[in-house]
Amino acid sequence: MKIKPQVSIKPLGNRILAKRIDEEERKTAGGIVIPETAKTDKVVRAKVVAVGSNERIEVKKGDVILVPDNEFAMTKVEVGEEKLFLIKSTDVLAVIE
Image 1 (cartoon, helix red, strand yellow):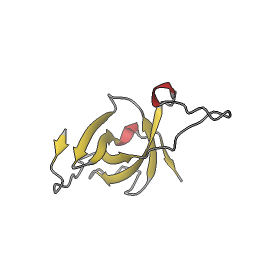
Image 2: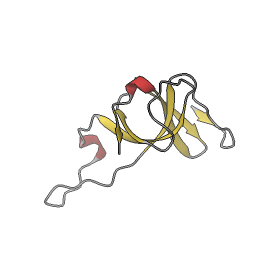
Image 3: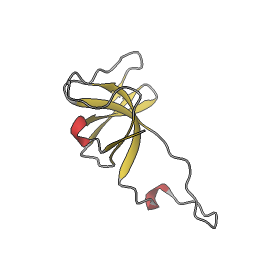
Image 4: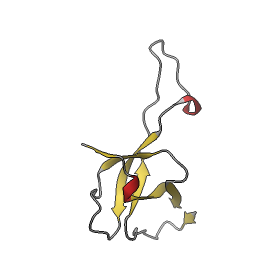
């Protein structure tokens, strides 16, 4: 879903708006670059951009979280050039401190 750049998004209820954190390029010990398609990570690192109004949400804006890398767990949203996603707070696996 694409949204105009001047629009801001406020998640509702128990939803979290987050931005994926790109990890640096991975290499083997021999220097071979591992392509994105060969990576076996089942989680995504993301930075929380906004949180919904539910008082039980345990993360706050700016937190770095781990969420499942699953098409069903996240709704992808584009605001201008920025690629974000909406997830349920119950899908957050951990907060990275």
